[in-house]
Image (tube, rainbow, N blue to C red; front, side, top):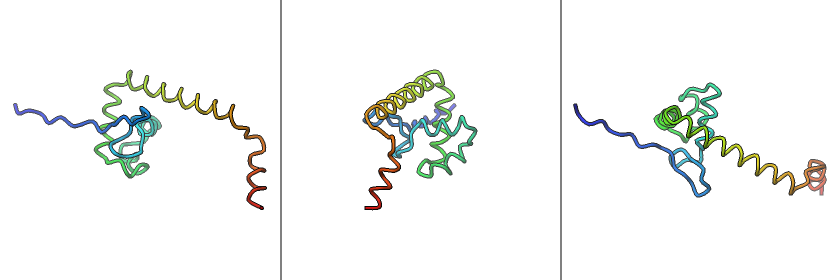
Length: 107
């Protein structure tokens, strides 16, 4: 039996500790959210044209093989996003924001 070529995983951890697909700005989160919403790898590539079809399949396969670990990663990312949103809402008063922006536009 001849050796099997190992496919390199197209996930890179950026400086903010966010998994991105290859050299794109597309996050692991985005691919998996589309997949869990029912999108096929082909539909995912249509949504994210910078992601290759091979990378789309590879990311989904990695997720399915490592579901517990990756679901934990996704939960941490959701928690971080909620924390950032809560902090921004505390720091910045959005009450009347639309009217203030429209008033600025008129000047």
